[in-house]
Image (cartoon, rainbow, N blue to C red; front, side):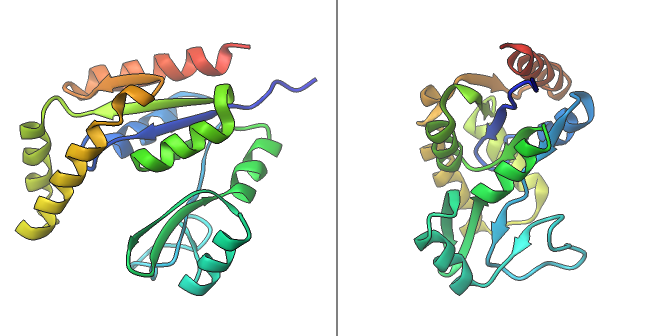
Length: 191
């Protein structure tokens, strides 16, 4: 009998280092597969449908919401949706892979609710709001207005920390990389 596959959810406020940790995890732990999200936004230069995202129209996205096709979804901006298709999760699990998610806090909690003990919800926490703000400013991808929105959202997202299975504080990237690998290996090896 094949061992049951599991789900690993990494969630964090923007700038906490979640995506960096996901990339590290994918290299270090065998038998993981990354869940590709669906979005209604247009592809950016160099993005490939089915590799970076599943690009679908806002109308198609809304239709799939009505059909219950998503594990989780969110309308980030008007008519700009992001979500995780149930079919994507099941496809990867049928391949015998443990599924890794890089999703926002509310999406992570939705996946955890749906899959229960088959899912590990990891909250990546910045050392402080000051450090988070410095990291976001260093990226130079935000104007002052959108930076303020991101920080306000981060403040709200931090309030959900206690609902996650594990909190990992990313104050030292090398230490955080080791910790995420240990936590995930223990989880996938547990019966």
